[in-house]
Image 1 (cartoon, rainbow, N blue to C red):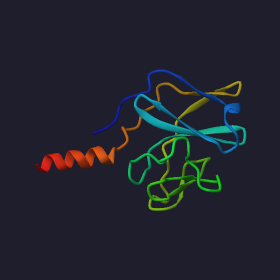
Image 2: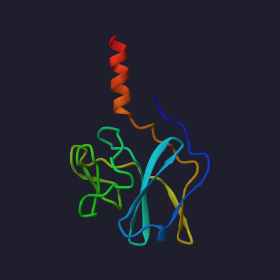
Image 3: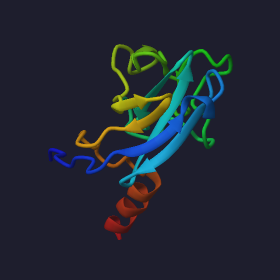
Image 4: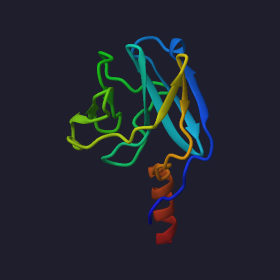
Length: 137
């Protein structure tokens, strides 16, 4: 089933100075999770969905980077993604990319752009497993 929902309005994300270098934050928009990482004088944002399993990348709030704070890391299976491009460079989804969130910057303040497609809701593996068990009864 295709996802045709669009983000209806622009949403403030943060100011550049709100984040330290290689610090990340997360936000829920329209029941979809996203995260943003500061790299230099720019913020990069992605929908919080692993391209391999469809689950959120993090298991600790606001923690999306590897031990060295060099790459985005999926907590489910260890895939590594470039901060600048979202491209997977190691792991089971190597060659795939995270879905970027379109941002607008004005006077060092970042906004989530309106009218961009919303991703499908992330999978809730626990809820799906419980539902599957109920179906068997």
